[in-house]
Image (tube, rainbow, N blue to C red; front, side, top):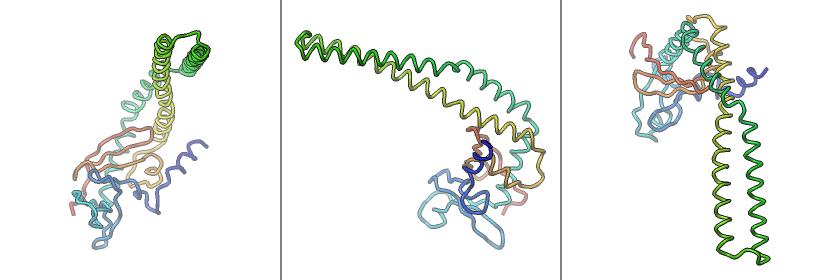
Length: 225
């Protein structure tokens, strides 16, 4: 059910799997489909409209789809040598920070105690018990410790967010494990695992898959047009 909901969240605009997926490396805008001599091509939408001076590389739909199939078949063939060990290594790393929640809780307790100290200092200063110079020095020291703790807290929370990435990589590994090598372009599979494609050159595409995995593949041309 979780996997199904994630797939719905990434449904592309329009009725073609490539819509909203291909990005221009120069201006950052998406590619759009056009028909030339009854052949489907994709090109930067801003370049087509004359709004950008980007290189304007144009790719046949067949070449893009075939390149994806070349990439996916490599993943399927070498899953146990590449994807599975990588996932296992990441899971071992994540286990080292599995106590993040407890550490964050302890940091929050320390910050609360330090904030109470600042409040006490302020009361003593207001009542005249603490002179201005001592109050300033003590308050600055405590605020510095709070700042350090908050920095550490942010770092721990950032590490904990890697769990979401691992979940998506596990999903990708599961999908690849259940998929046979493909002879034809599978639009449903494409939508499930591809988040973004960046055109790195006239001969290469960079695919960002679920889990943030980025892989480059040489564009497969059956016939250069």
